[in-house]
Each structure stands twice: as C-alpha cells, then as structure tokens.
Image (cartoon, rainbow, N blue to C red):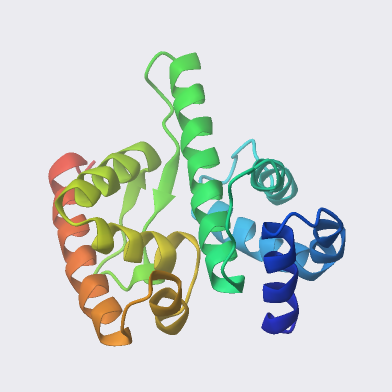
Length: 190
C-alpha cells in the first residue's frame, strides 16, 4: 500500500470526509491483521480472541474517534497498535476477574525487543510496568509501545513522535533495560 495514499485518506477523514473511511479500509485491513497477529502471537496458545476479532474491535474503536487528527500512516498504525494492546489488557483483566485472580494472560517478551533471554510475562504486569515507565519518562514509554506493540521501525517511530532516530534508539535501549529490570522485579521465576 502506498503510504501517500493512506496518508491522504487519513487526512481527508480527519477533515470530516466520512467516505474516506470506506476507501481506507481495504488499504489498511491487511496491515491491521498483521499487527493483530503479531500481538496475539505473544499471547497464550488458547487465547479466546482471534486476529479478526481483535482487528474488528480496534477498528470499531478507531472509527468512533471523533477528535482523531491523523497525521500520517505511521501515526495511524501507532495508535492502532496501542488500541490493540489496550483491548488485550482489558480482555486479560476481565478474564482475571472471572477466574478470581487466576489465569492471567501470558505474553512472551522475546526477540521482538531483543532481550538477552526469553521470558514469559503477565500482560497485566507489562502494562503496569509501562505505565510506571510513562510516569518516569513518557517518551521512552511511547517509544517502547510504538516499537514493540505497534511494530513501527526506528524511522517510523521517529516520524510519529517528531524526534530524531538517534533519540529513538537511545530511548529504545534505555527503556528496554528499565522494563526488563522492572519486570524481573515484579514477576517471580517459576
């Protein structure tokens, strides 16, 4: 999909042209499915949400945004990735409540962020740690979310946040190190 086509349609949508959504949907659907599959690949095998359901739920929430000001393709997919993460966290919390505290959703935080070792983590613990990181350094938290959850490249992340690639690299390395240390502290090894 040509990024300029998507960006143009997103800008029309932002300007209030609801017909742009109909033109945009076939251009972005495959990428949204890939993003959903990437998220679900990190979940437990018997997860009750499927890629299609995750895409549809995220899409419904995205088109319901009244104040969204889509800058470009990277911005849209960054928000989409964050929306999918939020849906998965909400789903995990609901299941945890249903099971009275047990059965938290597991997320494998592995080669996707180049950690020195593979480790299974609870999605809720990861979400809590990211919120704590956001309180300490909001930009580092955004970089982690965009790179890990939205699957953006260094260049796309820099563009989405309006910062340099060097700053993204620095925040990526520092944020990952902080997150790993924090998750080691929060999640007991079994």
